[in-house]
Image 1 (spheres, helix red, strand yellow):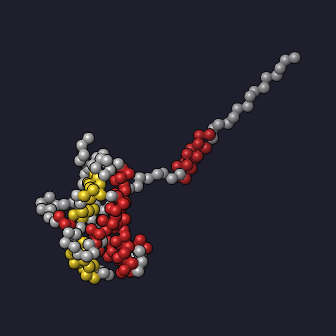
Image 2 (tube, rainbow, N blue to C red):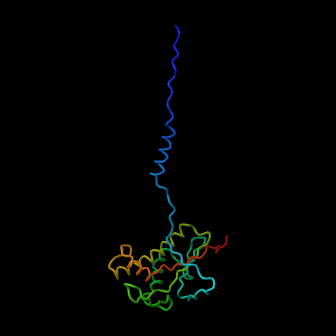
Image 3 (cartoon, helix red, strand yellow):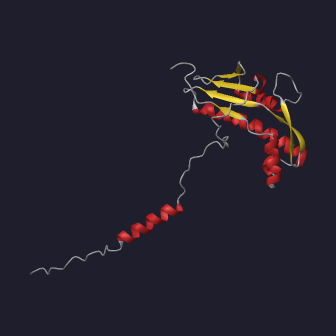
Length: 193
Protein backbone atom coordinates (compact mmCIF):
# COMPACT_ATOMS: atom_id res chain seq x y z
CA UNK A 1 0.00 0.00 0.00
CA UNK A 2 1.53 3.19 -1.12
CA UNK A 3 1.57 6.18 1.16
CA UNK A 4 0.18 9.31 -0.17
CA UNK A 5 2.52 12.30 -0.01
CA UNK A 6 0.97 15.24 1.71
CA UNK A 7 2.72 18.64 1.61
CA UNK A 8 3.63 20.21 4.95
CA UNK A 9 1.72 23.43 5.40
CA UNK A 10 3.93 26.53 5.49
CA UNK A 11 3.61 29.20 8.12
CA UNK A 12 3.04 32.60 6.69
CA UNK A 13 5.85 34.69 8.26
CA UNK A 14 5.51 37.73 6.09
CA UNK A 15 4.08 39.88 8.92
CA UNK A 16 6.66 38.85 11.58
CA UNK A 17 8.96 41.76 10.72
CA UNK A 18 6.09 44.21 10.99
CA UNK A 19 5.05 42.83 14.38
CA UNK A 20 8.64 43.01 15.67
CA UNK A 21 8.93 46.60 14.48
CA UNK A 22 5.67 47.56 16.17
CA UNK A 23 6.76 45.89 19.43
CA UNK A 24 10.08 47.75 19.30
CA UNK A 25 8.27 51.07 18.78
CA UNK A 26 5.90 50.30 21.64
CA UNK A 27 8.71 49.56 24.12
CA UNK A 28 10.72 52.60 23.04
CA UNK A 29 7.76 54.91 23.60
CA UNK A 30 6.46 53.25 26.76
CA UNK A 31 9.74 52.80 28.65
CA UNK A 32 11.44 55.42 30.80
CA UNK A 33 15.06 56.12 30.11
CA UNK A 34 17.18 56.94 33.13
CA UNK A 35 18.47 60.44 32.79
CA UNK A 36 21.51 61.78 34.51
CA UNK A 37 20.65 64.00 37.41
CA UNK A 38 23.01 66.34 39.09
CA UNK A 39 23.36 69.18 41.45
CA UNK A 40 21.55 72.29 40.32
CA UNK A 41 23.87 75.26 40.36
CA UNK A 42 23.71 78.46 38.43
CA UNK A 43 27.17 79.29 37.25
CA UNK A 44 28.34 82.88 37.46
CA UNK A 45 28.89 84.77 34.23
CA UNK A 46 32.39 84.56 32.78
CA UNK A 47 34.82 87.10 34.16
CA UNK A 48 35.98 89.83 31.86
CA UNK A 49 39.73 89.14 31.38
CA UNK A 50 40.48 92.86 31.31
CA UNK A 51 38.94 93.46 34.75
CA UNK A 52 40.79 92.84 37.95
CA UNK A 53 38.95 90.28 40.11
CA UNK A 54 37.44 91.78 43.25
CA UNK A 55 39.33 91.38 46.48
CA UNK A 56 37.62 89.19 49.04
CA UNK A 57 38.44 89.65 52.70
CA UNK A 58 39.47 86.55 54.59
CA UNK A 59 36.57 86.90 57.01
CA UNK A 60 34.16 86.58 54.08
CA UNK A 61 35.46 83.14 53.02
CA UNK A 62 34.39 79.86 54.63
CA UNK A 63 36.94 77.33 53.44
CA UNK A 64 36.13 73.63 53.24
CA UNK A 65 38.78 71.15 52.16
CA UNK A 66 38.08 67.44 51.69
CA UNK A 67 41.10 65.17 51.43
CA UNK A 68 41.48 61.77 49.77
CA UNK A 69 40.53 60.03 53.03
CA UNK A 70 37.22 61.96 53.12
CA UNK A 71 38.33 64.04 56.09
CA UNK A 72 37.12 67.62 56.34
CA UNK A 73 39.13 70.71 57.11
CA UNK A 74 36.73 73.56 57.84
CA UNK A 75 38.26 77.02 58.20
CA UNK A 76 41.59 75.43 59.03
CA UNK A 77 40.20 73.12 61.72
CA UNK A 78 39.26 69.43 61.48
CA UNK A 79 35.56 69.32 60.65
CA UNK A 80 32.61 67.02 61.13
CA UNK A 81 30.07 66.43 58.39
CA UNK A 82 27.24 66.35 60.95
CA UNK A 83 28.05 69.92 62.05
CA UNK A 84 28.81 71.35 58.61
CA UNK A 85 25.26 72.55 57.90
CA UNK A 86 25.02 74.51 61.16
CA UNK A 87 28.49 76.00 60.71
CA UNK A 88 27.65 77.08 57.15
CA UNK A 89 24.34 78.53 58.31
CA UNK A 90 25.95 80.55 61.06
CA UNK A 91 28.65 81.75 58.69
CA UNK A 92 26.22 82.91 56.02
CA UNK A 93 23.73 84.53 58.38
CA UNK A 94 26.16 86.03 60.95
CA UNK A 95 23.20 86.69 63.26
CA UNK A 96 25.19 88.56 65.90
CA UNK A 97 27.35 90.58 63.47
CA UNK A 98 30.55 89.06 64.82
CA UNK A 99 33.79 90.53 63.44
CA UNK A 100 35.16 87.10 62.47
CA UNK A 101 32.12 86.24 60.34
CA UNK A 102 31.24 87.80 56.96
CA UNK A 103 30.33 91.39 56.39
CA UNK A 104 26.93 92.41 55.09
CA UNK A 105 25.95 94.94 52.49
CA UNK A 106 22.64 96.77 52.52
CA UNK A 107 20.54 96.24 49.39
CA UNK A 108 17.08 97.35 48.40
CA UNK A 109 15.21 94.16 47.52
CA UNK A 110 11.68 94.39 46.12
CA UNK A 111 9.10 93.07 48.63
CA UNK A 112 11.73 92.98 51.39
CA UNK A 113 12.91 96.60 51.39
CA UNK A 114 16.37 97.36 52.72
CA UNK A 115 17.98 94.05 53.58
CA UNK A 116 21.46 93.06 54.84
CA UNK A 117 22.88 90.56 52.34
CA UNK A 118 25.87 88.52 53.44
CA UNK A 119 29.13 88.95 51.55
CA UNK A 120 30.12 85.45 52.63
CA UNK A 121 31.41 82.91 50.12
CA UNK A 122 31.79 79.21 50.80
CA UNK A 123 34.94 77.93 49.15
CA UNK A 124 34.95 74.17 48.58
CA UNK A 125 37.95 72.20 47.40
CA UNK A 126 38.18 68.44 47.02
CA UNK A 127 41.05 66.08 46.50
CA UNK A 128 40.98 63.88 43.40
CA UNK A 129 40.80 60.90 45.74
CA UNK A 130 37.71 62.18 47.57
CA UNK A 131 34.92 59.64 47.32
CA UNK A 132 31.79 60.54 45.42
CA UNK A 133 29.74 59.72 48.51
CA UNK A 134 31.61 62.29 50.61
CA UNK A 135 31.39 64.88 47.84
CA UNK A 136 27.62 64.49 47.72
CA UNK A 137 27.34 64.62 51.53
CA UNK A 138 29.20 67.94 51.63
CA UNK A 139 27.10 69.36 48.80
CA UNK A 140 23.93 68.22 50.56
CA UNK A 141 24.90 69.85 53.84
CA UNK A 142 25.71 73.15 52.12
CA UNK A 143 22.46 73.05 50.18
CA UNK A 144 20.52 72.26 53.36
CA UNK A 145 22.11 75.25 55.10
CA UNK A 146 21.03 77.62 52.32
CA UNK A 147 17.57 76.07 52.07
CA UNK A 148 17.00 76.41 55.81
CA UNK A 149 18.07 80.07 55.75
CA UNK A 150 15.69 80.70 52.85
CA UNK A 151 12.86 78.86 54.61
CA UNK A 152 13.35 80.90 57.78
CA UNK A 153 13.33 84.19 55.89
CA UNK A 154 10.37 83.13 53.77
CA UNK A 155 8.34 82.16 56.86
CA UNK A 156 9.27 85.43 58.54
CA UNK A 157 8.38 87.60 55.51
CA UNK A 158 5.65 85.67 53.68
CA UNK A 159 4.38 83.16 56.23
CA UNK A 160 5.32 80.01 54.30
CA UNK A 161 8.32 77.87 53.42
CA UNK A 162 10.47 78.92 50.48
CA UNK A 163 9.63 75.73 48.60
CA UNK A 164 5.91 76.50 48.99
CA UNK A 165 6.17 79.92 47.35
CA UNK A 166 4.41 80.13 43.97
CA UNK A 167 4.85 83.78 43.09
CA UNK A 168 8.12 84.36 41.24
CA UNK A 169 8.46 87.84 42.75
CA UNK A 170 8.58 86.30 46.24
CA UNK A 171 10.99 83.59 45.09
CA UNK A 172 13.31 86.14 43.47
CA UNK A 173 13.26 88.31 46.59
CA UNK A 174 14.32 85.42 48.83
CA UNK A 175 16.96 84.25 46.35
CA UNK A 176 18.40 87.75 46.17
CA UNK A 177 18.46 88.08 49.95
CA UNK A 178 20.15 84.69 50.42
CA UNK A 179 22.19 83.89 47.33
CA UNK A 180 23.95 80.56 46.74
CA UNK A 181 27.53 81.71 47.25
CA UNK A 182 29.51 78.53 46.80
CA UNK A 183 32.83 78.59 45.00
CA UNK A 184 34.13 75.20 44.00
CA UNK A 185 37.73 74.83 42.92
CA UNK A 186 38.98 72.15 40.57
CA UNK A 187 40.04 69.02 42.50
CA UNK A 188 43.73 68.51 43.10
CA UNK A 189 45.95 65.86 44.57
CA UNK A 190 46.19 67.68 47.88
CA UNK A 191 47.17 64.68 49.93
CA UNK A 192 49.45 63.08 47.31
CA UNK A 193 48.79 60.02 45.18
